[in-house]
Length: 240
Length: 175
Image (cartoon, rainbow over all chains, first blue to last red; front, side, top):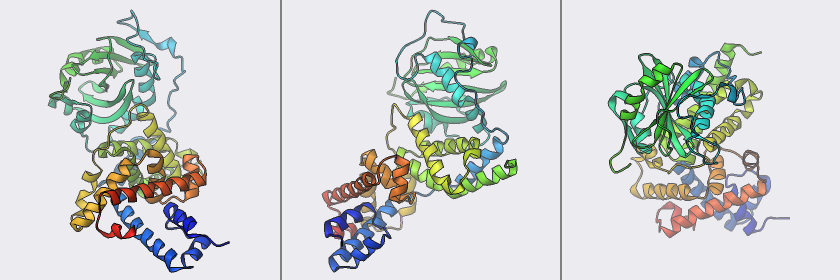
């Protein structure tokens, strides 16, 4: 049975470059079909032109560098249930978890541990792969900026999930070695609360706009960055 | 068991073959250059770690897209970012176009960004990634007829938008 014009137009709208024999046969069956197909092709060409975004310069090389910087790491990431509670020590602010939200994580502490276990090592591995680090562009999306002293030591920065929406995950190249900082624009924490889990220490910092977690292998190292981080992530003018 | 050099060669091939497509796709789902680059990089990091699970190289593109879509959903499940800068990324390519053509493209882009995700995503897969309706159906886990309906409606909405905005260039002749 041959295709009627209504069916033909529907197919044209769904798959204008279809090579289906029945479709091609219908196209040639009358000038009306042929004209509709030609118009659809014209629209399709413009649509393709609209959607064609050039890839960034150096994209391939940058992606390929991932295999060099993480060679040998087959990704056997530590799993969340791994002796979860046994290794968790809340050293400061043990009076209670900071807040409950019932949106995936029960507390900011749980979020920090979960997120770091999920992404901590991988983001650390990215530090060598990043050629250009656009700290201010990412932070400005979150309505803050980094002072130059902070921006200058960020080795990698990426967006990350937080309990209250989008945040930023940074690796700072400090004199004492790399340190992770997670910026949470909308999340409140108990200031100076220290968490110890697995083989790292995490210090929560209340900021003028949001909060941060400083995570590193050594308590003294993360504590020494408390004042620096608190003064280095500044709300943009008009934001608080 | 594939050697480390073999793994790297396989991975480098994937970066070369699909990196730009993934970036384009990421740009259209998140509308932000920095975020799109980050999504693509994250996708390839995960791909590198899970490379041994990719047994059929012909399935690599859809495998990478699946990783990217999951990563996008995971990162932004609670708060989808605002579209900001598709035009900024492409504008340098279009200086040679006539003003009327630029206008049409700009309107089409706005239309694409304003499409509901259920229409935009199959359209992206078809136009940007070159997927067939069957492939889209598998990727989105919906029936082929649903895919065709969504594609048809996506295009109808884009054409309506151009009509509404009174485009007088080539696309106008289509209506």
